Length: 604
Image (cartoon, rainbow, N blue to C red; front, side, top):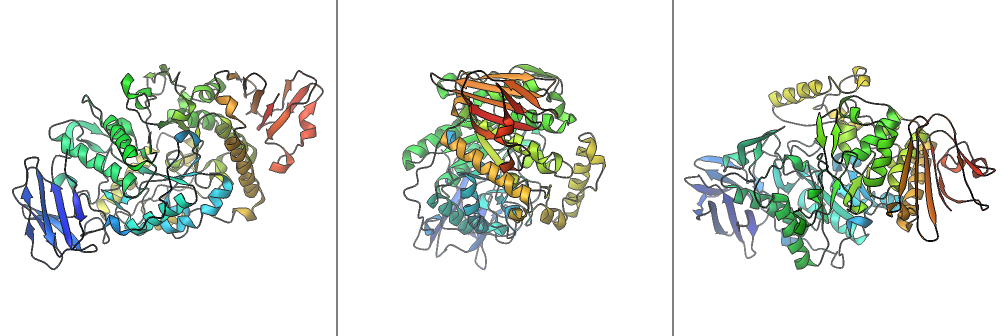
């Protein structure tokens, strides 16, 4: 077992410093305006020592063989990624969430947000002011995009270089704890997006300390993080300790693990399994429930399979297939990886089992992808119709509201929220935000800025045809960042307000269990390719639940049997949702008349 890395304040003006640097000749800790102190090395390559008269708030660096760097396990970088680290006392915060126990993934309604663009202030504490909005909407879980310290003040968060430090410009340790505390007191769970597959390119000094990377494998960002090569035990410990810190010291309710297919570990006990087991131990210790959700494009159920069957035991995984199925049918886009989607039969398959590619050949990837999700609970799968990747990695960062009609936005929302999986909304989706969400950075190195600008341009050469029109948004420009901030005046715009009310109704019905039957093993799905119709139905002893989703441009008539008129739970084309029909227009004699781009959910 590795040691606690970083600077740990033990009270009585005593601080213990520890850093892993196995090949260093000497390691000293340098406190601002003090004499350097030499640390002593143990057999595992850790250098440590306890210093007297050193208190929280003081600034320090490590000197390794005459070179000075910030602490790779720094909890705070108040002067940026190249400067001093600051000592933080985790015990100083007075938590008010003692009765909080967390919640199961199966009951989560997740809302993904980017702290910097969610509010005009762009801080952790400013998010607290929007909890009324999220509560009214029906959200119970917030997922923060990565907040590990990155260069400058503008970034998606995937360029983080200090995994233990909460971004200073967002409000740092104190602001983050206040946000999580406020959320728990109002019955919101909070999940953090963490990046264990790469470090950002600027301020990334960790490799100067030891073999944190390996040339054995390569990822899209360069050499892979060393999870299974020589000296990997301490590297694994670094990231396990990081994950447990977010859960225990910051009270997060779970982690979303970025692109786990680039966490390359061929050892007997995969890093993710070890993380899952250590999280189980923490649950025993704290009496709280934690969830681990993996982002993976492999459609591999080993991630969520139980330990006894050789799995990693995570609670859930993101499913891109669901998003791609809905998006391609709504927009008609077929470039890039969207070429693998666009069929109604695929949407029907995604609605039933989340994975489309379940051991099926992918023409885009030119290989067979995935395995079968049969036997897994729907609550193991997190689905969306928009997220930061699918919006922000478009050249112009257009959201769905810019690409499809108002009726189609409602249709998409209903497809996601009636499906039996754990839903995730992307900030602003609930009111049809028109502002884009674009890719932005604030790097300090001009050569790096130029490389990112040119790299983004290259990336988009092949993807969306529509992208040839419109200006390329400069990632480094502050304007690109400002353009990506949410516009909170949606109630003044009739259709945006109606969309919000429609989402509210859907979420209310979902939480009441109105669509629960669609998660039953009796679920049947049927697709009509030509008319662009998806039909779903399920039944138990006394009730049948039916959904008809018309993605086509023409009306659709469905014959219904029985003398009694079915009970309509949701009709998206109803006048009260800004549509052109009333319930009286829906029923004919022994039939349902479903307008184009509309959905009806009913009980029989």
